Image (cartoon, rainbow, N blue to C red; front, side):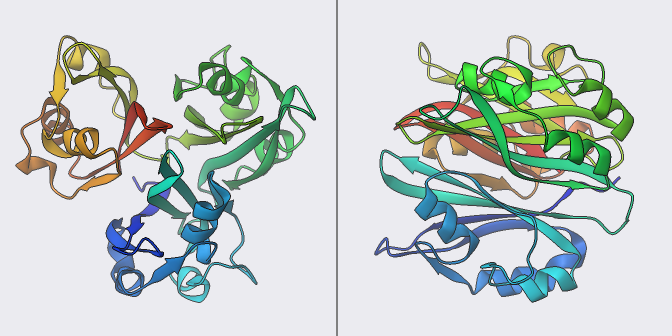
Length: 314
């Protein structure tokens, strides 16, 4: 089973704060050469995809590399990559990091979706699609491009209302997922949405829709900080193997600095775990037991407050 996400990159500011440089990454086995190219790259504000997300102040999705500002476009196409997403993290107005996700498939019939939704309050009460990448799910794509969501309705609308990440399992059958019938026909089985705001009247929601054949990740978990004891508690999750994550993590916590998840908790920047078998946290041990060896963790911030951590296991 191949993950829909083929590469994950973390970009952080250089010492002068004038550009973003490569910090770490996870790459599919066939992308070693692409990693070497990425390790040498640097991006100023508004330069390339990481720089565009930095300047925009919200997630950016690029669904076509041709004649685009994606500086590694030729290499990306050569290695079968067809979509890229950049998610910036700010502490107040200062950039902390940009996480890049590079997606694609070796097969023409693989399905998965990454969508970027937007609302500008002074213009509309609804959230509309800015752009999305859907793989082979063409009917689902067509219907999504002609769909809008009110606050609190559908996956983007629920994340908008919650002002935090929302995960829905079995989206082909879930009443909360308003495109359930379309998702079922496309073979999609879970969705994750993360909202972002500019502190004004605009909100963006980036959503990830996963299919069983090419999942966005084989496991995804949302953890939330507990202000009373300074630990993380499991909130919700999905595992393609059907593992009962609620039962596994019931009563369990992760402390600051404990494994990859705890490192992201302590630093509030994205962190990659290259070998979970060498970690002792409950999250790492549970993943390793399921045969998962790597993870990448994305903090979700509001101003300078850590709201949640999302752990993906490709």
